[in-house]
Image (cartoon, rainbow, N blue to C red; front, side, top):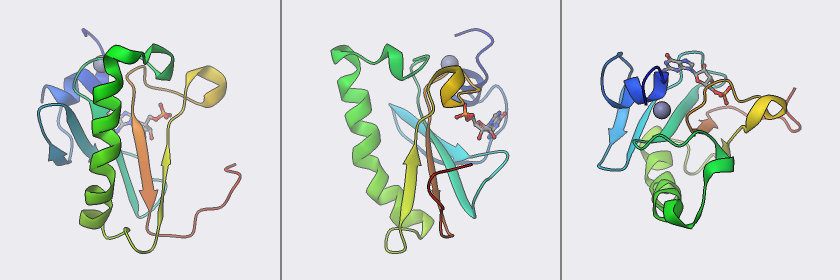
Length: 114
Ligand code: 5GP
Ligand code: ZN
């Protein structure tokens, strides 16, 4: 989608530190990491938010979650633990309108978040 920053990252129109990519998803370092490990997992297809997930997109969502254990191993947090977060909409703190899963780890994460 035009003017979507994460579509541009997926299309390599703007640079990012990509740590994994396949036909369906791209995983890259968050530009403002909130923890020693902080990557964003995005579908290559533009999906605006959790609100736009339906049965047609179930395969993409399933693929994201089935990649997470291997990503966590690669990032060194599989044993220590990690958190996966999706923000949705204004009150949820979503600032980029392309569905993304934060994977955070490498330190003890407090709950609830600030
Ligand atoms: P949200 O607040 O929407 O849940 O998360 C958006 C995330 O995208 C933030 O953690 C922010 O640091 C990250 N982000 C925003 N713009 C860019 C960018 O241009 N490159 C990268 N790598 N991360 C970005
Ligand atoms: Zn997009």
